[in-house]
Length: 160
Image (cartoon, rainbow, N blue to C red):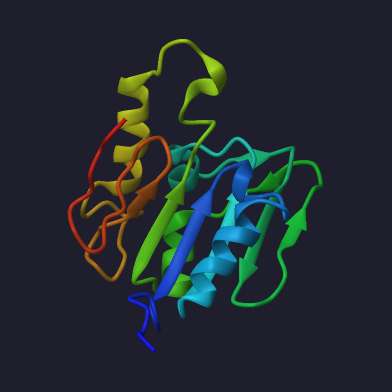
């Protein structure tokens, strides 16, 4: 039996409302990564934008987290505080960070994508040597959604 490339890696997955609902990616994506042998820590909150993971904010519509094979823990109370990415990195020491930002990065059905804004949001999270983007790979973060490519310990790719 072939061993997964993810076996034994510590993955930190952060995202928007798709990671905050127990019936969405915090279950399906988290389970798939765990089943491939990764040690997974997932966090999400509604309306998440890249800068919210760096500078923090409060949300009124919920957040969730999940660790390993435990079920998701959801907070739906008013004014829940977001998790600063830097603290999550210090807590979990990930080999790789996966960022899922779909609807919030795609402008919720607008006719034109705000490309400059998307670039700045992704750049806020992925600029090497920034305080928020220090994974074991030295600053690389894998981005998924909005056409982003997945990067394993390589410079970030911006594709919108």
